[in-house]
Length: 424
Image (tube, rainbow, N blue to C red; front, top):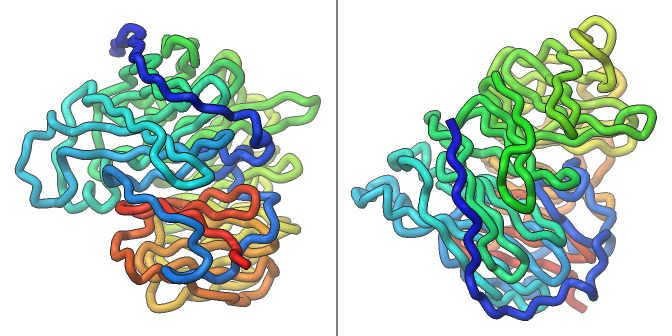
């Protein structure tokens, strides 16, 4: 079912240093290093605009909904060009190019921009696809390089200087929405949820792109997988899919446990706190709390609660005994994490729409709407709006979740990447 391309080396002479920025300051994958959407950074701005607290902005060479990630002095983004920039594009889908871009964190200058052609037939552009594009998955990065997933166009790996390491095919099936899952890194593996493309989760070797293990029959899951902690200092890989929440051994891919889940497709990322997993999803919006670490069917022993509120697309954060998120329907929620009871439910300003997930940092909740700016809420169990920030000179949609590091917020649209920081 799979075919893998041989290792390719490109001679790109960029000098890149990653030593002067601590790894603790990095935001190295979708929703940060823990996958929980939480940053320890302080001194972040509450307010900004096109004229205020924009440290720099960089024009991007292509469109995309993926979030920025950070490693050392580099920011990585994905984008696409040459096909599908509008719903009316009648060009050749085979012309599509998938980009991985490195940007200097300090000044916003593009350090390198590399691209590959699709591995399989490209899903034809539609209004639904152009809404988010062909570069929706956020890359993941570490000292070995940067790894990006482009759905049927494959997984691609570059070293930090922009040399292509490998490109791998993980399936050619499509769905109406397209691809959305992001890769995560675990030890020597890149873990890819290719549920849509091949109903499979893959662990690929970072060095070669070869399959280390795979778990099949992963159904209707656009979600990014999660590495979670369990008692005894061990870790499990959790995938939330239609009807089931699944736990795996991340070293071997062996399925360890299953719990009855949400009776619909799943997009939000599982978040964890103190041995409890919080799982959202479904068009009817549901939320489930479950303990990992079990064996077999743990529905009766490990599921703690299930409630009929949640989100179809966006992921939550945990803070001081509460879950916070804003749904794609533009409603902000706060739940008591012990029992799932709704603490508040409040509509965001002016019928906001959301694809991006909430971020917690500096005792504030940053809620990125698609077309009404970033709403900043106080991180307390009552709805307290601190600011609503718009960059009115940028008319593109804000589909990407922010990255946060060392007092700065990195925010991306189809057209630009912004570094937002408090300016004295």
